[in-house]
Amino acid sequence: MNYIDGTFVHANDGQTLENYNPATGKVVASIPRSQSADVAQAAAAAKKAQPAWNALSLKERAAWLDKIADALQEKHEAIAQAETMDTGKPISLSRRVDASRSVDNFRFFAEFGRLQKPMMFEMDDAVNHVHRNGLGVVGLITPWNLPLYLLSWKVAPALLMGNAIVAKPSELTPLTANILAETLDELQVPKGVFNLVHGLGPEVGQAILEDQRITGISFTGGTATGRIVAATAAPLFKKLSLELGGKNATIVLEDADMDQAVNGAVRAAFTNSGQVCLCGSRILVHASIASTFLAAFVAEVKSMTIGNPVESSSQIGTLISMDHLEKVESYIDLAVEEGGTILTGGTRAMTGAIGPNPDGAYLSPTVISGLSHLSRCATEEIFGPVVTVHTFETLEQATVMANATEYGLAGSIWTADLEKGQALATTIETGIVWINTWLHRDLRTPFGGVKNSGVGREGGQWSLEFFSETTNVCVMNPK
Ligand code: NAD
Image 1: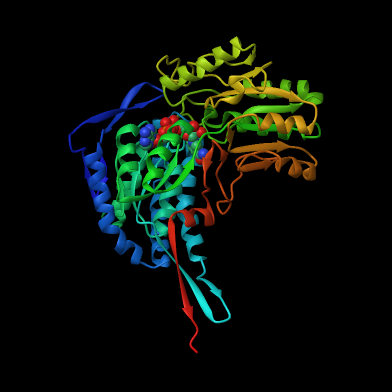
Image 2 (image 1 turned 90 degrees about the vertical axis):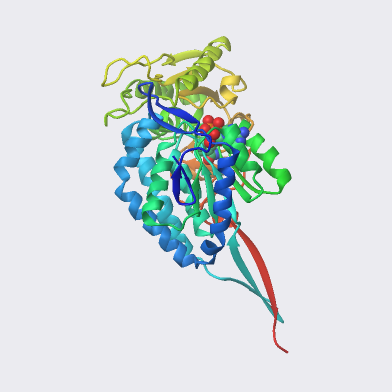
C-alpha cells in the first residue's frame, strides 16, 4: 500500500504491480502502480506537514529518530526476512548488514544531530548567525540492492533537518519500505511528514522529479537513470544528490598479505552476488604474485556455499531477477567473445537447500582472466557475481588501469606498505578508497562518487548540508 498523509491507500486508479521472490519466481506481494495523481497527493500532504515538523527543535527531531531506531530494532528479524524474500540475498547478510544498518542509520543521525553546534561568525563590528532549515519537501528515490539500508540512509537525515518526504523505493523491493511506513504510523509521526508512493520509475519516479512542491531530490540508482533524473530536475532548480553506479578496482600490490588480500578481494567481489555499488568487480594484481593470488582466490570462490537465501549457511543467494540474471549472463558471453577465460563459475547454479530451482535467479560466482582492462566487461558495470582479473607491473600502470572507466565510486588497495598505499590512493579517481579493508564504514565520513558515479556526498555533515538550506543573519553590534 501507499502511505499518504498518515493513511495506507491503494493507487487512485487501483492499478497494481506484482512483486516476486527471485529465489522461487513466485509472487509474494502486490503493490500499487501509482501515477502522478498519487504523487501529487503525497506532495501536497508533505507540503502541508513540513512547516510544523521544521518548527520542532533539532533535539526534538533527533528524539523521533531514536524512537524510530528502537522500533525498527524490535523488527530486526522481520526486516531481514522481508529483505531476503525481496532480493534473494542470504539471510545472514540481511541480518548483519541490511536490518542492522537500517537501525544504525536512525541511531547515528539522532546522535549526530545532537552534536551540532550553532554556527556563528564574528566580525569586528557584527555577528553572523547561520540558521539551518529543512529544504521543504524532498523526494527520495532508491534502488533494489540495499532497500531499507539506503532508504533509511536518506530518511533519517531528511527528517532530522526538518524536511517532509515523498519516498519511492524500487518496484522490485517494496516490502521493507512498507515496514518503515508501518513503523512511523505506529509511532504516530505527524501525518504527512513521511509519504510512500510505490510504482515504476518512469511513472512515479518521474512524477516526483517533476512535482514543483518537491524542492530536493536524493537519488541512488544506476548512472543511466541518474542522467534522466538530472535532466528533469536540474532545469527546475531542485537541489540534487546523485549516488550512481560503480566499477571499482581491487588493487593488490606485490607486498600484500596474501590471505588478507584474497579474503578481502572475494568479499569485495561477491558480497550480495556482486550487487553492491561498491563491489570490487575488477581485480588489478601485481604480475609477480598474480599466479599465487589467482590460485588462492579461485579456490576460495569455489568454496563458497550457494544456496537458498533463507538458509543461514548460504553465502551466495540469487540475483535480483531473472531479467537481471540474463543481463549478467550476456556479459559472461561477451567476455568469452572478447577473449576472456572463465576460471570458475559462469553457469546458473540451481542448487540450494530446497533443491534445484530453475525459477530461482541463481548464478555461480564467476572469475574471468585474460581480458584487456579496456574491454567492455572490464569497464562497464555488470552488477553481478562477475569479476575480471588483470595484471600490472608498476604503480603507474595500476593507476592508469584503475582510472580507465567512466566510473569513480570506490576502490581498495592491499599492501603492507601503508605509505605507498596512501600515495597510490590519491591517484585513483574515486570518492572512497579502502586500504587493507573493504566496505568499512564510519557514518561520519563522506560517501559518494566522482565522474559518472555521482554528484555530491552523503554521510555525517554532508547529509545534513544536503537536506538543509542556510540563512545567514548578520547582526550589527550596537554602537
Ligand atoms: P535504477 O536506476 O534502475 O533504479 C533506481 C530507482 O530509480 C528505482 O526506484 C527506479 O524505480 C527509479 N527510476 C527508474 N527510472 C526512473 C525515472 N525515469 N525517473 C525517476 N526514477 C526512476 O537502479 P537499480 O537497478 O534499482 O539499482 C542498481 C544501480 O544502483 C546500480 O547501478 C548501482 O551501482 C546503483 N547503486 C548506487 C549506489 C551508490 O551509493 N552510489 C548504491 C546502490 C546502488
